[in-house]
Length: 256
Length: 251
Image (cartoon, rainbow over all chains, first blue to last red; front, top):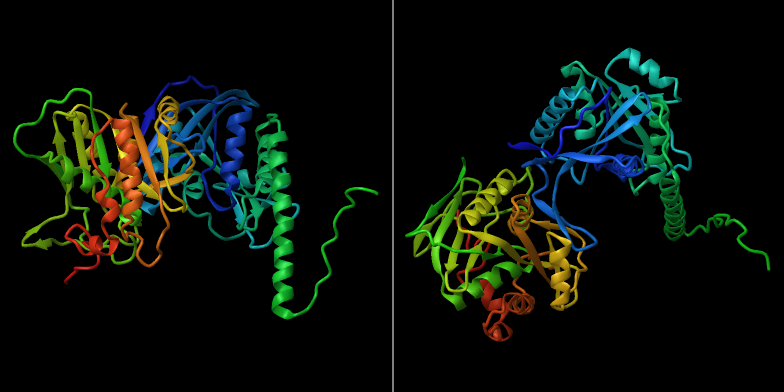
């Protein structure tokens, strides 16, 4: 088992909070942090490599190749302090690897002054919804009461699997507070609408503004995709049952 | 350390050398290509990498698809005498080439093995790694990729196209990725091929030839690949170089 943090720069940060999200169901968490990194012009300062990542490299659209990795960025003066953002193109695959990576990453950000860890994730319902709800949980009761004030539905039971769960769950072991915000999603599609809902609440909690235009555009694409999926499901149902369901109402797009 | 390199004879002194890597993989394109080069260039076997993570059999999936759930079965190969699985490093000093015949470790060993291989290539003075492989999106020809935009553009100016987007699994990909973190340039040449679900590593000789023809241009290499056109995949799959994972397995 081997996890290595390569430090590219050691920033001095004021009241930093960690916000993280790694690829998982619906890409909800990944979309949140991708957007946050871009819109805050966050600067890359450390890379995390692990022997527990999928044993592969990624070929990107421009033809360049990169190893699987997690990345830490910082953005100064966002709300009540600075932000550290944890992003990545993969999660560790094995449970041992996920624990090792979470442990090292949390020790590292604690050294930089982080007291609260905000992770993002997907809340999978198996059903498509137009207005996703936002669920949340935390490592202590006071934080639960706090996030409830932002319209977050508190998770009563269940589990948050993988690194997006461990990274805030283990924060408590290191005397930090851990909070997780989960966007409701079917789990079947890349869900930018769920990501948008999560980021809106997160920005309110941390008291900073973030331009949502790009994520909103992606969310509209999600909705178009959803309509197609619904139409395909409707047709499949027709074929199976022989019953002809009424067509989904299409908005009036033009008048002739 | 669970993986280590044994060096045979004197360590060659190479300057600015390049390594070419091919491993068991999709339609055996990389493996076929590197074995063909070794047969043609008759380089000297300079080192071997052994690892406790090398299975001799991959009962649940193709060799290049590693999972923590399925770690394969260890053992030895019997070919007249017995041998353990290994990665082989050949050196052609005149051309400044290191030829690496790769092998797929299990999930727990893939990164460690690739790291050890990169360390050894660095010791040999390798400045660029070229991995030969295949991608299963069909069609004919070659797609390229590289560790920097400069290298991508250089490949394009030599008539190659990018176009494959996605993961590159296993040893040949990891040496490129780990090499990049060590400041070694990397190039991938993917022969386009049709995947065969029942036998993912069934050899595609023509795709291997296409990859080698692209490599010849990049390295300005004079080798005749026409024999790959005449050979039959069925015969190759039964030869000593193939079927190590499944065909001749005895327990």
